[in-house]
Amino acid sequence: MEGNDKTTHKDYYKVLEVDYDATDENIRINYRKLALKWHPDKHKGDHSVTEKFQAINEAYTVLSDPAKRLDYDLTGNYEIDKYTLQEYLTRFKGMILTCNGLGISHTAIWSQQLMESKECTATEK
Image (cartoon, rainbow, N blue to C red; front, side, top):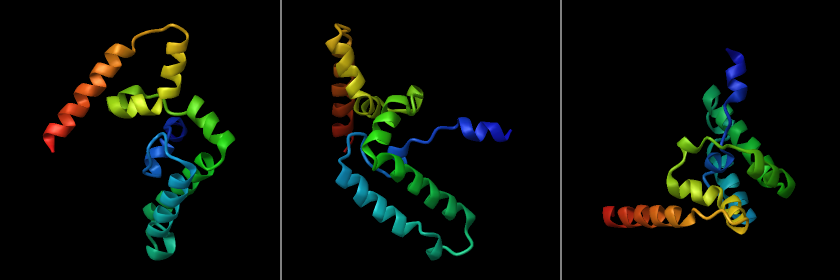
């Protein structure tokens, strides 16, 4: 069952706790904050902390390099059922906009759903 571990794809944006359209500066700042918080020296002997620290470093290695980030964004995590509508639209807006440029027009439905989800979030607060 070790092969299943490799098929599980990590969402690097969630690992670094940044938005999908985060700037390089936001990625760097969050990386430093998380690396300091989860550094193994601060949590001696805790194997799960070491794994989390390694995941943070892996995510930063990809998202801090423009070529690797573009490749990740194009071939990364597409498990749609794991995203909220707002996360999905933010994560894939580049592809959605490209589809619109090709004449594929379903954005009215997505826009309506996004507006409804924002209204629900605003009224819940």
